[in-house]
Image 1: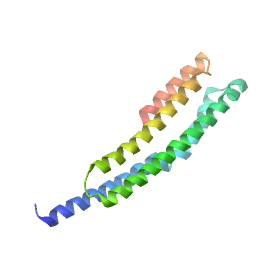
Image 2 (image 1 turned 60 degrees about the horizontal axis):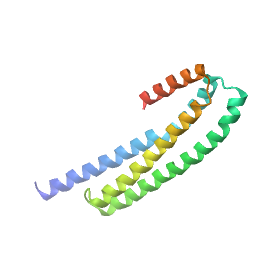
Image 3 (image 1 turned 180 degrees about the vertical axis):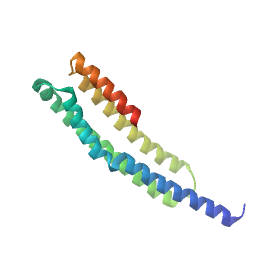
Image 4 (image 1 turned 30 degrees about the vertical axis):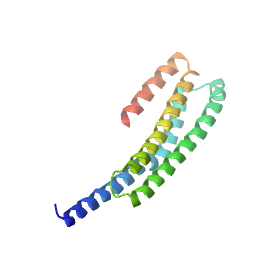
Length: 144
């Protein structure tokens, strides 16, 4: 392969990577927060929570909100580090791999605290609410 073809292919690869990453970022963090927040409020209404349940839910929501903000920040920082490394590295080097793993770790932690939060919420529900909750969560997971 000629040097020019190799440069063109590498350029196309990186442009695709950047466009794909931007699209993925928009899908994950762009409009999702507004959709996620309105879906969350709808979810609370759907369950018809009692005042006692709502009172117990407040500290759970506060804790989850703090954890979510923390891990979203970790993901952003890890992605910025990955971008900086990709500026200097011109291949999938161990440094790039390590940076990718850091992004994936933060994403995994966010998913973990989300699932822990969901199960903590579920413990507050009566049997009928729990059935609605289970169906809602399963449907939401299928849409991802």
